[in-house]
Length: 448
Image (cartoon, rainbow, N blue to C red):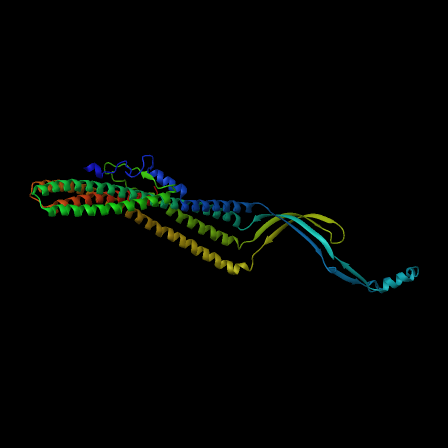
């Protein structure tokens, strides 16, 4: 009789013999490979990796090219030259004998202003490479911050994996619990059928009242109703588990083995385990990121130095002209210090806030570990109590059946004993599934 209620390698009788069988680990692995939350976290990791690579390119020279062609309605550089005004009187007196030798037209031209127009159209092109030499640590700290962002994405991926595993295992044990309850109902159904046969014979023989037979029939109807609800619940949970794990169909069975109560799990050193949890490491990364952001804010208000080289070309004077050059630039953010000093103070406060949040949440994480362990111990003792209840309820059922057959007990007492036995089996099933879930929560809380 006990074997009916023990957790064994099982499959539903309604499933085909060739249906795929999955263990808990196989289903969790399938969920990790097919769940959308995991794929989304993987995208975040890849995006953070590309951001880190993008930040690394800031170490290299910034190469840029420019080109310009223009055609104006008039020259951009225009002037008028009056040569007669440009020649000093003393020079003009000394050149008077020479002027007599010039043609009259030339002398007249010297007296008239000359209009000059340049750069009406042209082409300008250039290629420059600028290498940052000192940028207040912004490039170095920016790369460190990008690396922290990638680490954060990986830790968040770990948290997502924990949540997916937790949900998949909850569905698994929920399905296992329903299957075991179905076995309990079927065993109760078989027992009631046997009782019905015995009572029916006794009624026909006139040694039992027909009311006893009616009580058995009412109990059989109740069992049939329970069986229908369990069957519907089984179908629904199996569909949920299939969808969550990315299975192609729902015609699968699950395998679980536990003929005896498992030993109580081992308690971890919570202070040591704290350092390995993803939640604590995320808090540490938050402190590290706040410190780097403060350094970047300081660097934005420091002078920056860069060197460069370039090759340029233009034909502004109606002649092709190209030249190369090297240069150095120094930028000092003088007026930015007015607002920059406040930005630095703000980053200091944010860094201090992140540090205090680390200390406060670390204590909360240790409390969470202790609470999870308390739940493990409590659920384990509940499982032990449920197991003992089955043994007691089974003996109570045996005695009441013997008493009824001996005519010293009522049918209602026998049916109540049967109901208590069924309830005890269901409680043991729920207690075992709850213990497995509490163990998982403790493992995740301690970073195992």
